[in-house]
Structure formats: structure tokens, C-alpha cells
Amino acid sequence: MLKQTALVVWLGVAASIVAASLALAQRANVQEGFGPQPVSGTVVDVKAAQRAIQVGSETGEAAEWMLVAAGGTIMKPLEAKLSDLREGDEVSVTGWPSAILVSEITLGMEAVSAPTGGQGGPGGPGGAGPAPARRRNEPQPPVVTGRIISLDPLKIAVGRQSTEGSVPQEAQKPLPEISLTMGDESKVMRVTKVDLSQVQPGDTIVATGQRDDQGMMIANSVFVNMGAGMRGFMGMGGGRGGRR
Image (cartoon, rainbow, N blue to C red; front, side, top):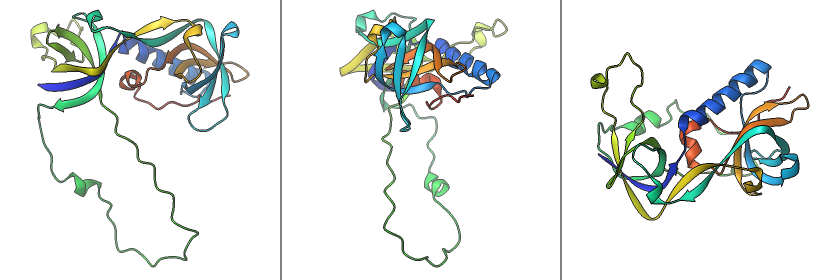
């Protein structure tokens, strides 16, 4: 049994909805000749009357304006309570495991990752100075998605059982179970549909949609401050979509 020290339990994060939104946007963009990537970054300004959001790029490019389509959806996590959880709820959990039921331990991985090669050649003339140190990425806590199977103690079953009629219920393998421990700083967040007035400068967003003839993103789906809740479902980096 793997015990997870839960930092955040994301309630209402439907992985299938998020993944489908991204997949549909990518498919439409590819068919129309646009780049597949969504727009992501930090909100610089919001013009609610025009349904416009100015987004600062994570790559240092100039901020750009995007529009939220009239029928577009904006999703944002709002703080909820532990008592809001129900058995059967699909959730995403982020936190550091405190114990893992080991299936395998592998030694010697340093030999696989170590660089190999022959003897180095003579050094060239000296440069202007040492290269800047590479920025070290801080490790991120893992994200696990599953379904609540017990409230006391709090447990989830990871993944989903097959819903295909060709797979008999008795033939399906039991899903791995994880026990969750809520600490003093643990949170429960409910992903909720909000209006544009709840999008503020400083928020981080991921938006999917299509670009118009002028290259402006018209977003059908906007995900605000999803953070780790999004990491488990996207499996891809953010960035600006390509233009014509």
C-alpha cells in the first residue's frame, strides 16, 4: 500500500474533460493548419466587457491579447472542505508519498545516465569566462488521479476500471489503492465554472481554441490556476499556438 501525504486534493477535475478539450483543440488546429499548442502564461490584464485577456508568455515573448468565445468555458479551482468529498468522486491528488509498496528496486542506474566517450582532445583558446550555471529544476510532487473508495480512512483507487462490455467484471484486475493523509496545510480544491470577472492579473492560465485570420486566439476553454491539477492531464508543455 502506498501512503500519500496529500497536499492538495483536486475535486471536480474530470481528466477526460480536460484531455478531450486539449485533444479537440489540437485536432482542429492541425486540420486548419494552426500549431497544436494552447496559449499559456500569466494574466497581465483583463477587459471583461470585451471578453479579452492579455497573457504574458512564459518564454519571454511580448504579451498578447486573446478573446474568450461567447460560449467559452472558464474553469478555476476554489477552496472546498474535506466534508465535500464523497465516495465515488473522481479526484486528482498532489503530494509527496511517505511510503511506497515496492515492486522492484534497480541498482546501477548511474552507469546508464553517466556520459561515455573517448579521451578528450586538447583544449581550445580560453573564452571570456565560465558559462552560466544551468538552472536546476526543483522536483515537483507527483500527481495521482483516481476515485475515492473510502472516506475514513481516506483512500482512492488509482485509474479507472474498464467500461467495455467485452471485459467481464470478474476478469478485471483490481485497481491499486492509495491511502491519503491530510496534514495541517493540506487543501481540498473544487474546480468550478466561473465567469471572466474571477480571472485576475497574476493568475496563470492555459487556453485552448483556434486563432482567427488575424492570428488572435479565440478560446473555447480556459483553465485558471490549475497548477498540479493540470499536470496530471496535459502531459505536454504550454506555449503559444502557431499562427498562419
